[in-house]
Length: 217
Image 1 (cartoon, rainbow, N blue to C red):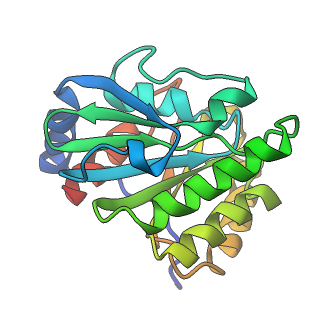
Image 2: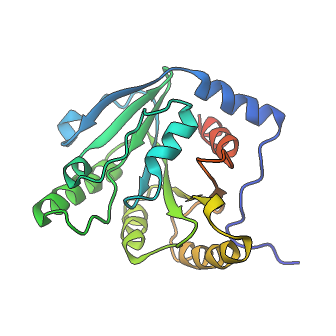
């Protein structure tokens, strides 16, 4: 039987799960919101970033990973989309929340400024180890997602697909979406060949994602 491309990540074994638990048992704190490259904190530790279109559940996932309710705040106001938000996870890791994309009502100058900042960050951050791109398990990859995937290709930043809201979709529909996502990822050379299926509400996949991030450290 031929293995599927971009398989779902297996649950961690006991040792891997413990490494992930210990990493995220440390203090999680908001450090700063950055609106220009000059405001970036020193690149003195491992860094991972999260990208996703608006309302994909990015804030909920970060809160679930860190076990800190309200650490990352969801916002539907376009003004907030200009910031790259940095969180410290213990002394050795930055979690970076990239601005949500896909706001139809954001003014064009705001969108252009955000795009410039994002390109500069992705191509010029030596401590950035991996980007996690969040895709809604109900909808799959949309054209607006393709833009960020292509940007990550051009920036030579390895990215891993994290499917969110898995509890909101029935298994048959989920399989259809997974096939669509796999086909989309196959077109992107920077895509890491494994996906993670998550539900922030139910906790599904959180231990898996924690162990993956701990493995990068």
